[in-house]
Amino acid sequence: MTTKASETKKHLANLLEAVQRCAYFLHGSESRITWPVEANELSARNKDIDLFETLSAVNERFSKLQDTLASAMRHAALLSGESDDTFLRVLAFFEKVSVLPSMEDWQTMRALRNLAAHEYELDYSEIAEHFNSLKELIPQLYKTATAFEDYCQNTLEVGPASNDFSSEFAHIVSPTPPTTEP
Image 1 (cartoon, rainbow, N blue to C red):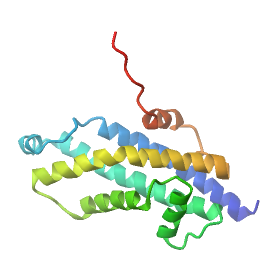
Image 2: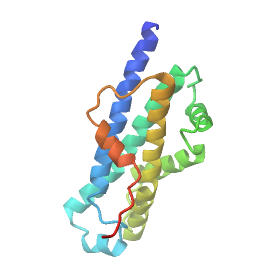
Image 3: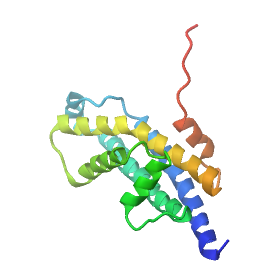
């Protein structure tokens, strides 16, 4: 293996660990919110610093997970011998290998996260709608992260640089087992 390929694999391993870490912290923030977010609750608690910091953290951590995953996907495409000159080609490749259900899903998540980064909404209904939409998309982002990690492990033989977040990541992204009533 060339030094360049080895360095790229090492960087990808670090990015895979970062993806797991991002998912861990996103999950931690989203679990502190009572879902769905209601406009009247936001209005009534409009000066609740803890609530709005947690909402802000959900927004930031969703964005960070998607950005880190995008960077990792670009590196994995390069290691796979695919063109990484445009991110649309990277997305098309990962759709083709079933990491992404569709490029449109990724772009929808991207548009929603970009909207929040550039708008400072004052209407509590709009704020609630934004966060409820993020909440609906989080499982898809986790599913993509899992499929991507599987692709890297099975195709490129690259896993996370350490197992620091591996068990938590596996728990976060696994389907919730059905509960049985006593």
